[in-house]
Every structure is written in C-alpha cells, then in structure tokens.
Length: 111
Length: 111
Image 1 (cartoon, rainbow over the protein chains, first blue to last red):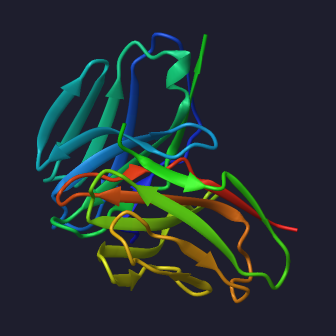
Image 2: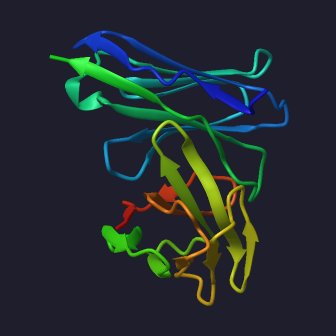
Image 3: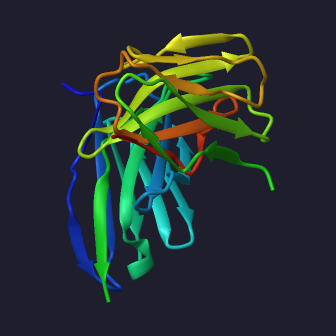
C-alpha cells in the first residue's frame, strides 16, 4: 500500500461549484498535513497547513483532517477558473522529517 | 522579499555531460531539498540537507550529486550516470515543523 494515495483526475467543474479534493494515507504517525497548489510549469505553493485532526479555513479554502480514518480533504467554495491547477497533498511526521507527497489531482474550472 | 531562486529556468544537456542546477534561498531555512517531477509520477525526492556540510540520499539519488557548503545554497549536479535526466527539477527549503517553500523549477532536457 502506498503511503499517500490521491486520485489524479482530472476533475472538471463549472465556475462557482464546490470542489472536494481528497487523500488517504497509511501511516498513523503522520501529524502534519498540507495542501499545495501547482500551476503548469511552476513550483508548488503552500495553500493550507494543519496539525493533527480538525478543520482549518482560509477564505474559500477549507482543509479537513480525519486521523481516525487517515483521510484528508481540501474544499474549495465558489471555485474560479483561476483555481485550475494541480493540487498536491503532503504529509510529514514531525521535526525535519521529509514530506510525503500525493501524486496530485488536476482541477479544471470552466467559466 | 524572501524566497528561493532556481536557475536556469531551462537547461539542455548533451549525452555524457554533467550539468549543475543552482538553488539559492534567503529565507534563513536550515533544510533544503531537491525533487524531480515527471508526468504521472508526482514529486520524487533526490537529496536533502538539514544542515550545512551534511546531506542525505532520497529515493532516487543515483546519478545525482549535491553539496551544501553554505546555508543559502544547495546545488544539484546531474551526472552522466543519470540515464533519463529529462524532467522538471524543484528545489525547496523549510524550517522545522512547517511546509516547504519551493522554487520555480528548472526544466532539463537531453538533446
């Protein structure tokens, strides 16, 4: 079983839709959960950073962590064409442990 | 503004040549990382360094070498031993217990 699983998509939605992006993971020791957004031919940028279980909201973005199910989600409200990108989940244990990345989900938001 | 600078943006390598990719950060981060990104493969860790003059191999270190003589700099050399070097290379840095900050990437092509 891979450490982090993420559906590659593409996920196509109309503008204004609510988007749900998800990852599952296998190692219960993971404590730090992140979502990155990557536009084509650019480096990933950190969108959301959460520690342990629970929700975190930032504008139109909500990150959700369910450690009991080993499941993390990113919700995007009122999606915009500018949200079209690849979204990568990333997880780490603690300290300087390296990040484990999902393979990314491509999101396409049509006007 | 603080950030990570990767250069060059595009690089062409002839068969049998060694090439060096530059990565410089002014974020005062201790840890630095090199990733390779191929379509459908996600991000794969090549090397990382948590402190000056020390570095560790990642999952795909064969055919690559690095140095960390200064905190700000973490250059990656793609040697002739790397048989399939065409890819998008990403450098990142981080402080303890937080996400990575990525550079804008170098696209390497073998000609």
